[in-house]
Length: 94
Image 1 (spheres, rainbow, N blue to C red):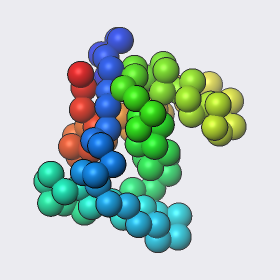
Image 2 (image 1 turned 60 degrees about the vertical axis):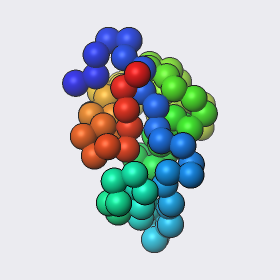
Image 3 (image 1 turned 135 degrees about the vertical axis):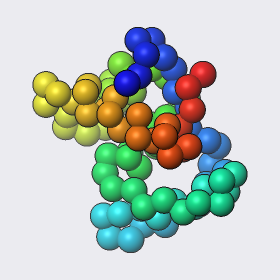
Image 4 (image 1 turned 90 degrees about the vertical axis):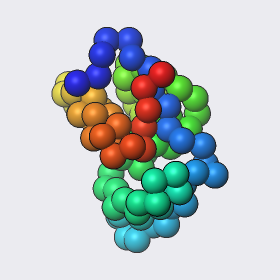
């Protein structure tokens, strides 16, 4: 579970190669050599993190500005996806 105030970042654009396949994104992570299959909202989270490192609360604000996220549990969803992306090596804590 993300630590309160923990800041996250995604790897630079030159570290990944992404191709859309319908609603899925195939993302080749050059540093690990692994190809990941991502479904929403993971690609959108990575895009929001490409705007700069931030904590989960700021990430949620960025996503709410771009998407209709009025769900009360949106914050928990974002934190769970951050955990998964961190475990996959696509997101790092600062």
